[in-house]
Length: 530
Image (cartoon, rainbow, N blue to C red; front, side, top):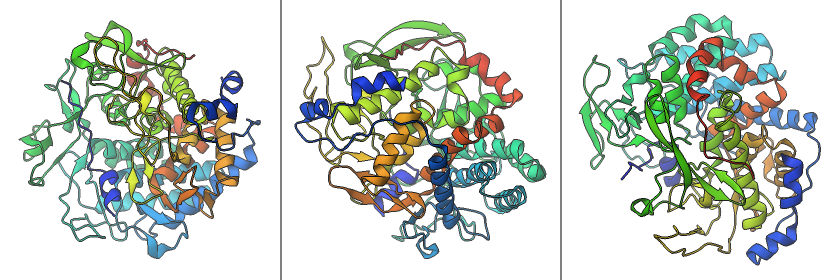
């Protein structure tokens, strides 16, 4: 069986403890949603032309919360902040992902006229100086998962609970920092002397396991450079051949539609990960009763790329075929696309699947569940903590990233092997996160804007720092805080829409295109937009 374990040593666990016009005709009627769920739908707004002034206001307010999260001495943002924007509410912990998000947000803020060129360079310089000073894993050039944003020290005791924290080096968290470094070394040449050594010392092959399941190898979730917590599945080893052995996680990122592909992209760019890695991750798990534990029965055919046989499976959803992520979340599907222009460079794969995934999210929210709103992705839980939300029907995980408070499961069965137990359930209090709609702006701009307008004006999921992190749409319960990463996704997406693809232009240099495009462009997904 494939290694299906996901890396949960990120903010997720720790926060828990403390074609639009054609689509409109098929998706808009509230009556269809009511018939599907037996509950009244919320207001589904008609899609209007995109209003740049409205998007600019959202960008300005989002930048306000990003600034409020950021310690002026270190240039590190807090992981989260209450909606009041009080600096006393900063979380006292942050991650490489959050630091990277602040860096690309600063570039976007300059591009949108929210800060000047000098202020942008000054802010980026302060953050890079701190990165050069803080403790990190020296042989790989990679950073630990948690730092105190107020002084840059590595977190070894959790601020809220006092529980011990063993420093962990995450492949995906360092991936977002690496993406941000590529952006600033290109877009802010004034700080090149600081950005270049940080970029050069990051060794992505520290995570690459050539012996993992799959002929092209896979990326570890990460490693510890000191003994891991008791019960952690890890083994001593070293892929670099320098420095002491580390405790490498036994689990790997083995699904293709995953936020972790950003780390693989960076490894390809640096020549530290082979092209065969790209084709060693699952599109879906194979067809057949031995694999009937997965969410649905895939359809597809097998193709060969870079010497690797790939089952180009997809799940059927409302006339579309969608290559699923692990949890069916917008974050997994579209966050890497903020930097790598996947739909342009891989027209027969991502160019089909990205709009198909967005369409599935819209249809789930408006038709299947009848929420009246859509946009499902890991976010703050309005009822406390943090949760992974998604569209269960387009996720591989049979246990689901669910879309509602009640964890309503969709089980269509696996024809010929497993009977359906819940093909058309009644959904409860759906939880929608604004960052999902911002990620969708590139593919359904008018519909995404209309959804966000509804979240702001009808549900009140908005404050001085922009959109609140999540809202339960039937009860109206709000998650009254901002998460650094989620605000960074919002502002990054707005930067690409309003700022002439600023993150694509900064990240996707000629060097990057030469490394990635020939690999990606070969593939033909089993996806289809219906």
